[in-house]
Image 1 (cartoon, rainbow, N blue to C red):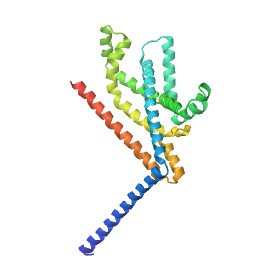
Image 2 (image 1 turned 90 degrees about the vertical axis):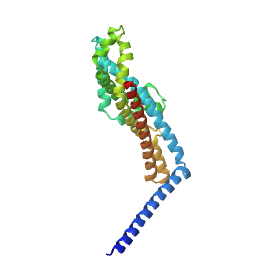
Image 3 (image 1 turned 30 degrees about the vertical axis):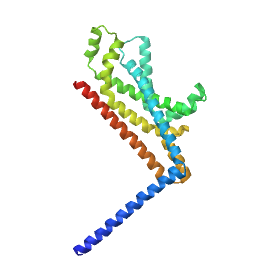
Length: 256
């Protein structure tokens, strides 16, 4: 084959690839318009996105609150009977939550626990509490490790200044521990956002359930799930960037 023939065949091949790529993206664009506009998919996606963000945000708040309480109980040095009971309950809670799938916990909470203790509770609230309790077990271990990473002399220094153990923990230990655990907490929040994709099992219109609803109307599996994957990816990338910026600010404040 001559050089001219080779160049011509290469040009034809590259043009064919370009045409196929253009056709592929054109088809995706047409499917997106068909999915979001003509079949009302935008309504499902917006509702699913809002519910996903609400569940994630409130679950993180609950998880951090529960995690702080459990971590303080676990690292407490008091050996009274009450503290021993609390410490046993904290260990039991962490073992059970971390040892069972979050999907099973969510289904049990929605179909077995809440109908008995609080009938009529909205599924969205059940999901927030369920994911929050699940997250709390992991946050507790993150916070406990962060507190233990702070030098023991900090507690002694606070007590020598006349501060109570609670005030020393609040004013001296916790601010330092937060800097240590921030990356792990950020990862927990990102994991929590992705875990909410199972909220549809208790009838919540989250992003994944929105894709299911769109697929049921359009019989197109690829486009709605591709769109939902991109949305999850954007959320994670934005959160990762914000966390990195926050960590840099904390490091700058340490260097001043």
